[in-house]
Image 1 (cartoon, one colour):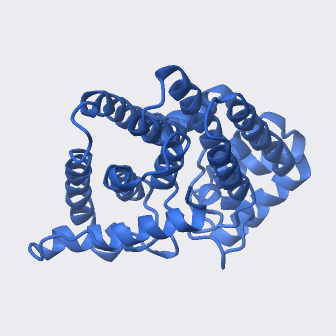
Image 2 (image 1 turned 60 degrees about the vertical axis):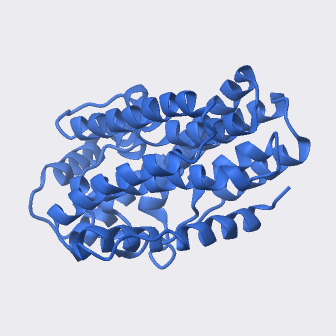
Image 3 (image 1 turned 30 degrees about the horizontal axis):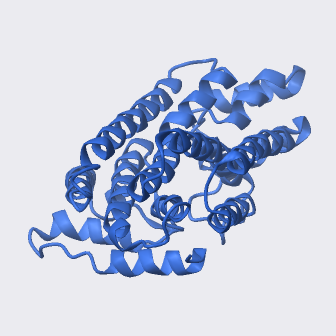
Length: 324
């Protein structure tokens, strides 16, 4: 049974061994670049953690696990274009370092490469794995579209927001755990519990990401702090603030949302002050902890290897305390 650091090192080693053709360089260099930026490799890690719940022999699960990481980075490359994000993991995004056209085409190629890695699967489970993968990939796209649709809506309900992050972020975490368990031979009934566990954890993770976008230390946060505020992104924090603000606070918040010309630092400071007055940070933390607690309850119910369950729980606890 491998520990989290051992699994992370195994994933890193395998990613470092992925090679691409040298030409055309503007197609393949961005793929190597975004994969080299690191991160926690959470999704392939969850694949291997899901596998270890049944079977600690991971040799045949590693390359399929990398398929999930390559797919995830494909979505990031395209999301960064749509969000006009300048930074990814503290470095320039692909469309900033190259250009939008390069980022679109390199991202398309990454999706194809993800399917190449899935071909390493046992042929007996390949159809089921592809069905689950394809469903998840479509849901991720649905979540991204809903997120963009929110930009045109004046009012977004909390329930709508939770559904959006479930699709955009959480279903891929649920799939990752279920995928690993599928490769290891876990019965379908238990796999579905594991999937739900991953989705709950994913919603909690995204709520934490929303919090960090406002409250993180820039030196430890891989993205631009306050980016959601600057772009009027309808996160849980903004949705709750719009629900609860009254009087002068409400007028000030709406004024900042309507402004087209502003000093970004001034806007971030002003909106964060309103969040603090309303206790938005505490409300977000409470909801985040609610989803992580639900995930832990499902993990307790799961019929799987005790040590494997503890390692997975330790990883979730690490996520809850993350600074970047």
